[in-house]
Amino acid sequence: MLVGVIAGLGGIVFQLAGHVVVEYTSVAIAGYSPPEAKGEAAEEEQDELALAPLEASNEGATAEPDDLDVSPPEAETDATTVEAHDTPVFSPWLLIAVMTGGGLVSGILVYTFAPEAEGHGTDAAIDAFHNKRGIINWRVPIVKTLASAITLGTCGSGGREGPIAQIGASFGSYLGSVLNLSARDRRILLAAGMGAGVGAVFRAPLAGALFAAEILYSDSEFEAEVFVPAATASIIGYSVFRLWLPESIRHEPLFGFPSTPFLTGSPLELIPYAVLAVILVAVGAFYIKT
Image 1 (tube, helix red, strand yellow):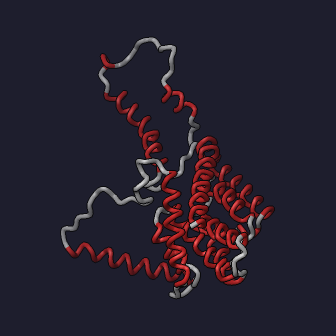
Image 2 (spheres, helix red, strand yellow):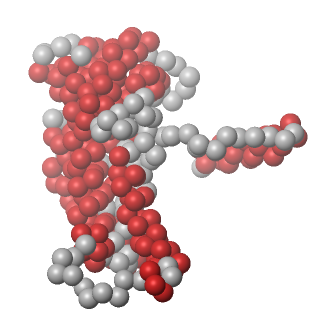
Image 3 (cartoon, helix red, strand yellow):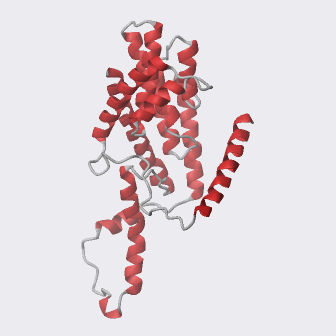
């Protein structure tokens, strides 16, 4: 239970740190706001800001001459206009500079304070589970949170799964060490923390539990004794994380479904999808092997 609470809080800090870095680097310097998943709160605000200039230009273009306001400017300035002027124009060169600087700062953080936090994150957690008796350095969750937030916030190449998996695993490992548990129990807490972090950030507690139980092996094996603790921690972590979300999206999935229904006029339309599936399987197999 405690692992789930800590992992949920860790997910909140991870998300907040990423949003802060985005606002003060990619948006403030390069004028670029990266796209987000449908279920994230920032998307609605981004859509409104993106559509506001277009709607204003359309209204101005379609207005009649008599409708145009030719009165002298008022002393007060519209807040939207001020905000539009304060927002920098998108610059690809500045975006490249932001990405480069973010990668440099992230690399310095990792290699200076916690080299174990380098890389994807999930692989390090798996290695600790199998080869290090479930022990992860206490500095890893702190450094991984900061370094990953900087990398993702400056539009670097990466995702949330690996970082939050290692962050959650680190919480579980540290708790097991503090409680002086056996290596077996510490490894279970590590896996539970990994599942709780993933389940919280991706708002999918069942998926987080399954992830923790099956990601530990490269084949089809399943760590059965991990599943129940991981499911418990994942549900609690998700519940804690959800309380932080705005009410409007609190019960929504992270990845929404399209509002337009899929209609088929004939079963033959499924043939191209079947062909595409075969091609993707071949490409995926080639990618894994190489």
